[in-house]
Length: 270
Image (cartoon, rainbow, N blue to C red):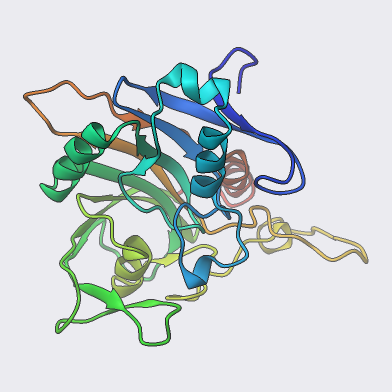
């Protein structure tokens, strides 16, 4: 992030022991968007217990009348959609109650388009897939599941982008935003997302797995990217009557490093 790039910062112990900066992707009069890293929650739920919560941190800073937020014209914090704590990418907030209603109406009318990029392995030859299985909360309180009886409707379109040996980069597009939706739909279409452990066996990738002759010595080996390889790269509006700018963000540095290592040691195919 360039030194002069706009951001929202938090002091120590708000979101961990260290201070943190989040790039400001969009600053519109009615809403703003930031780049959320993996491992940080944005909504309260039992399965987010123990994780730092960026929504709570922002509310705390609004009460503290943080100058950065006052300068943005933030009157309160109004989340438009939920982004899983395990995932990274675009997170959108309305600045006022009026704009919360506008954006939630657009979301409810399926006029927001969410685009993810993810790394997966699969035995399938298909380059385009679709899944419209409904999703409901599991009785264990920790997961979601496919349910034709109680599930909420949602659709995901999958498009192959390129190959990295036995792994492939895919794009997932949806107008819905159910909790764990992309992870479940990918698993249902036999796309094993790297780093996924709840709904598929998507083992993390270690350098010793892809680099011939690599010796790690006696120290424990860490995965090249220690997060689920699923990132929300953009949120765009389909509102012809109003020009609402969308938010776009690149893949996390660790994710990019993993792709470069795969390209270097495995070689792209197709």
